[in-house]
Structures are given as structure tokens and as C-alpha cells.
Image 1 (cartoon, rainbow, N blue to C red):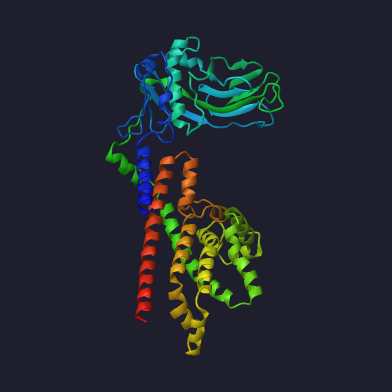
Image 2 (tube, helix red, strand yellow):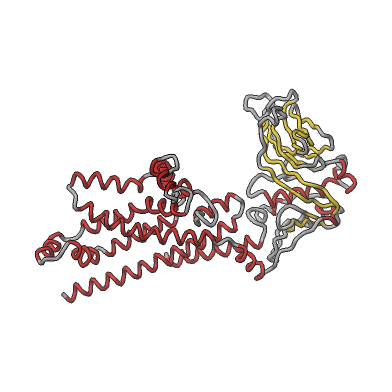
Length: 485
């Protein structure tokens, strides 16, 4: 299992670095679906669309080169390029300044942009409505000429694929395309309006029924499921700068030097402090609970154990209700200048609360398994309770205590839900590695998420290995002492 863990961690780390050198999440994985276009760019690269393997962040699908930031593209033999490419995942269905224009996408401060809207009518194949501004015709992008559009559609597909992060892409060969230079275009009773200046200096793409109704309402007879909107500017190819990233080892150095390592420091600091509290409180709680009556033990044991069975989000919510600024306890901490919520101490509190039961249950089970006659004999020899605890109970129960420490440490290391509720996600302050993995993945940085996944696996492995070796030496020492006796 140890070798499996190390191998898995190594694979994850290497995969994250490979992604850092390549295209990101899904650009490379979908390259095989590139359209078989007939224009200059399509003819050069229709056979095999693939990401570059030279270690750079510029990705070539056929003859199209996409800049490392995913916002620009050029193609061989094509006089125009694309800049400012943006993929708006969702739009808004609210009125703008009291006027309802339909389902809208904000596309910037200029009407002179192209915009492609993905749509899916119930019972029909998905389609794309592409608006090409009149200015693009001077660059060779003529909406009335299908062949002239192929280079642009191929370039648009590659940019969209690069930024998709696993979402639906504008694939020319997989869906119907409606191309227009008009400011309004209708597909059935659904009207697509482009260059709508709903606010002064702010332009939108609006989708509504022919009567101005909401076509995204499930009850509408013209219901359409709207996806993302891709937009940007068409400019001369000479005006497009494609930034090359370092290659090979330099790319690895750049990835590691640009990495924000604060989640590692926050995690180490949080888990290190938390495990001290968990270890001490768990042992004391286990020892103290055994001194109570049987009925009281049942009640106390239930209280100490309940965080282990509650979902972490519930624990975080309850802690927020207890320590929030609107509570007496939370306000008291604010008054003394030590606010708890959304601060680093909150990450420690969350980790302690959710991991404490594992330490407590392991220690209590170990103490209950000790020979009571031996403990009573020690008392008859005049040993104090503290001496008995330190000289007999701890050494004899150490294997179980060490196991409980490992489990509690692992639980604190991987804490997510309660930490997010109580401490929030503030980079360099409360963002632990589990939070970083989730939010980096949500932001499309799978390479960074994989890197942190590999780090936490390797770190966890060596910590657990150290504790197991330490526990093994203790067990051998105790066994040798027993044999000598």
C-alpha cells in the first residue's frame, strides 16, 4: 500500500506538471474532434488537431495557434486573427434599468465584436447563432461566403475548446450554424439581437421571443435552452501577439515559481496546531469520561462523539451559529479584539471539532481495555492517579493512541466543509490545501489542483509512516519489557 500511495502521488504530480506545460483542462483531450474545415487553416490542420508537445502553453489545433491565456489566436495563411476572446458561461434574465430585453450576455463596451450563442431547442439538434460585424468583411470574414467563414469558424472552435473546461464547444461539424451580419436574427420565433446598448457604453447580446417574451421559461411555447456565449474581436493577423511560454525544464521552473504556496503553509500551521489540541483534549476527555458514573458516561460520550457522525457542513454551520458576530460569544471575541470567524484561528477550531472524536474514541477504547486489577495494584503501592496515567495507562495504550492520532491528523488535514463555513476561503489566511484543490478546479486550474492533490498524498504518507514507525518501536519496547519481566 505504501508503494501504491507513493506511485499514485507521483503520477498526480507528473500529470499536474504535464498539464501546466500543455493546454489546461480539456483542450488537449478534445483535440481529436477538431472540425474538418475547407479554408486555409482547416486544410492545413484538418487531419490531426493536437496540442503542442514542446512544453509551451501555446496550443496548435492544426494550423491554429492559441495564445497561452486563451484570449487570442492566429492561423497559418489567414490574414485575420482573434483577440479578446471570452466565453460567458451564463447570461442574465433580469431587466436592465427597468427594461426587459430578454436573456442577455454582456459583451463589452464596443458593438464591433463577434458573438456566438449556443442554443438547444427541445426536440431539435443544438445550433449556434454567430454574428459577424460588418467590419470583419475587410479582413476576409464574409458572412455570406461559407468558404470564407471556415477559417474563422475553425479558429473560433479552437479558442472555445481551449476555454471550455469540459463544457460544450462550438463544433462546426456537430451542430447547425446560423451566421449573420444583421443586428437581429430569428430562429423560428426566437430573436437574437446583437449590439444592444442597454446601458450607456455597455453592449449586450439579447435573446427573446418575437413578442419580447422570456423564451427561457419552461412554460414558453418557444422555449429554448441557452448555453454559453463566445465573443471577441476580429483584427488583422499582424495585430495579434501570441506569447510563447518557456519550454521543457524552464516551463517546469515557471510552474513551480509562479505557484502560490500559501495553502501549504496554512495547512501545515493549522494541522500542526490542531493536532496538539486534539491529542491533549482527546486524552484528557477519554480519561475524565471513565471517572464518571455509567449514566453520565453515556451522555458525555454522545456529546463528544456526535461531531464524528454529523456532516462537516453541519458542524461548520453550528460553529458559525455559536461563534458568529451576532452571538454573545462571538461578539465578546470581537470586543476583545480577537474575532474568530473568517480568520486563521477558525480553521484550527474547525479542524479540532471534526477530528477530536477520532482521538477521543481511540483513547477511550484503549483505556477501557486495560487490566483494572493492574491499575488497582498500582494504587495500593501508593502511586498517584497522574503517575498511573503517565507510567501505565499511556505506555500500555500507546498503539491505539498512536492510531487515533494518525486518524485525527488525517481528518484534520482533509477538513473542508466546516472550514469553509467557519473560516471561509481567503488565500494566505484560511485557504488550506483541500479548499485550494476545490476552488482551483472550479476555476479551471486542474493542473494546480492535481499538484496539490499529489502534495497532500505524499505529505500524508510520510506523516503516517513516521507515526507508524514510532508506534512500532514503542510496541517492541513494551513487548521486550514484558518478556524480561
